[in-house]
Amino acid sequence: MADDSSSLLRIDHIAGKGRGLVAAQPLKAGQLVLRESPLIIYSASPLTPSAASSPPFPLCHHCFRLLPTSPPSNTPFPCPSCSHHHFCSHKCLSTALKTFHSSLVCQTLSHLRNSSLLQQQTSERQVQARFVVAAYNLVVMSPSEDLQTFLSLHGTPDDSILDAAKFLHSLISPLFPSHIHISVDITAQLLAKDRINSFCLMNPYSQDGPQRSIKAYAIYPKATMFNHDCIPNACRFDYYVDTADEEHNTHDMVIRMIQDVNKGREVCISYFRISRDYCTRKRILMEDYGFICECDRCKIEANWPHHDCQNYEEYSDLPHMRFLSKYVCDRKNCNGTLAPLPPKDNVPSNVLECNFCGNFKIDSD
Image (cartoon, rainbow, N blue to C red):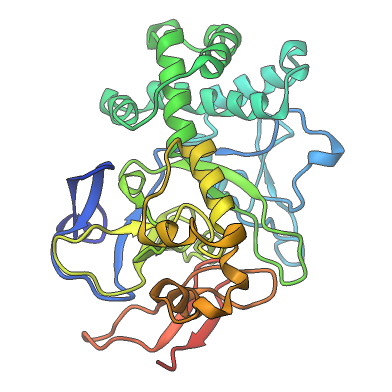
């Protein structure tokens, strides 16, 4: 793990959960414990988008930041081989052509856009096609251990995944070199891993809306080892995608601690906004991840009438309600998670930063 995080976190077996990440040493609130670049990243837009499903923001197809729209940098850099992909800088274009938008990927995506078979498919299937292209490209361009790392992740194909794999393999595999030897079964395995382990990269926050939508998906093999908790002790700072400096990849995964954690304790993140009510959390976790959360918060809220934690002032003294009051951003249209800034010289910061909108708040406790 980058940034010395290999000395901060270790993989361990967690009772009732399987693999998870625990603190290899005492961790401090605000401490950065993981920075990781994606193994695969691909657009969340359908290959043949309708006007209704078109992205609300013009994005660079490598870093997925907003394309410049004002002088002096008001001309995006187009892909030299197609008219569908644009980049915010020559650096992004150059990097993309060597990685996620190689000539093989470009040719394959162009071919798929003209496929009448794919045009008849749902938006979800078209996005799955983007993933399969990215996965096959990983096999072409990367060492075999990258594929094995991917296949070691959680996720088992069901009937819907098998049907998708059969269709997409027959459509896409002829467009790739025959020596990569990816079967229908491997394609199904990859699709299952992607469904369980992919992280969403979100469109920029706007105080006046609309709600943040998904602009891309990415696989981070180490970050996917974090288990979920509805009261997490760490969180992902995904707005850095739009603010990262030249030193760091804009789609790096950045995980920071919310609270202090002792050595040996599990480090957990939330897979969604922590302000969501019990019924919504339960539905998302079962539909998207296939499990029922048994954290302390869920055990308490499962017995509440209507399960809506936001309307129960009489429970405000409960530990998890105090946590939500302190660490949920109250900025309009946000509800992101607040975490302290990194400590300086081992002195904890009293400034909290929102992982969604980047807003700052003074911790008065």
